[in-house]
Length: 81
Image (cartoon, rainbow, N blue to C red; front, side, top):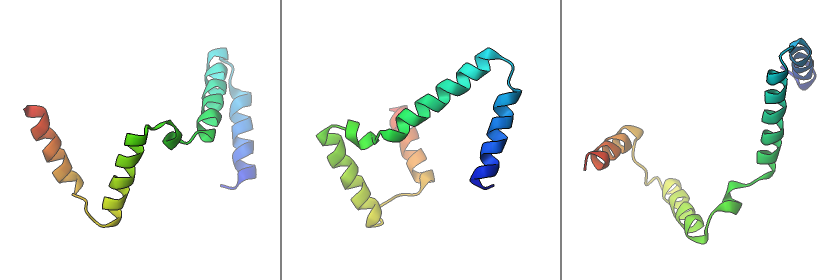
């Protein structure tokens, strides 16, 4: 769906809303999305968290990962301790 069609559908949807609460919820969701869009979560990380993130990315780039199923097994084992 192109941008023009999407905008038309959104306008139709908004025009069809009668419940004021739904309108406020849609407005709030849009405002919050726009706020989040301007944020980079990395800006909120501590230097230690950034370092750990960079190390994790490096490990993934080097193929040093484990399958999801194995990670879930490890988590289950840690939880049972």
